[in-house]
Length: 243
Image 1 (cartoon, rainbow, N blue to C red):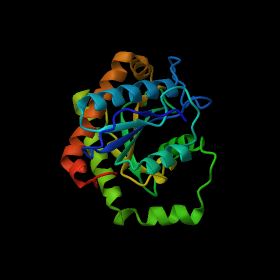
Image 2: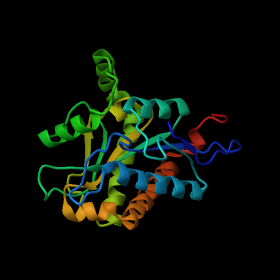
Image 3: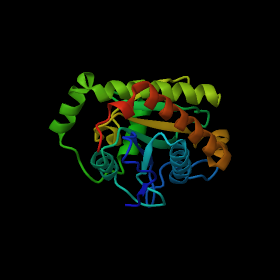
Image 4: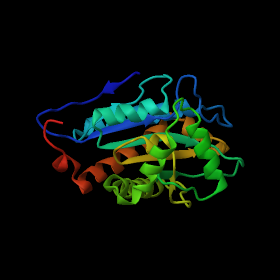
């Protein structure tokens, strides 16, 4: 696994953010109408996001992948768990059955899905995992969501992120914040969010997502949402020293 430890300051217990660029290597993810591949779009956004967060001096950052590597979903979540991450952000690009589908979607973990399209999306994103999660373990995690502090924080961060993306970039986000049982969120033990940054099956959005300028704009706003969340949740204060 290709990993980057972007910033480590042991004197100050800065919160650790793990940024996950969806897909990679043999897993192209969605392939856009303009030819762009999800794995390339997500890597561009994730690496720029890590750079901005490091430059802020307010977080430590780890990337689950820093190049075109094939990494199983279980390994991504395990890496975040083993690293003691305070926040997990998985970056993706969407696809739809109609070219007119467009806009941002921001997800946190839930047992249920609101419609058939989201069920298909979850199936597509989850199919890259080589490891089956035991049914009783999945049920235990999902049953305890309402009692989980990290689940509540995931919901708050998802709202902050979605609001900033739609407001700062003027992106359509009419579907709002959604909940779904994405495997990578299920396996993460810290607050975790998955963001679908646009539809590669929409010609206009595909062209934007393929552009370095738009990837940088997305990264800047996602970084702003993370830094706002860190400040509002006081993650650096709450974190035990020496972790």
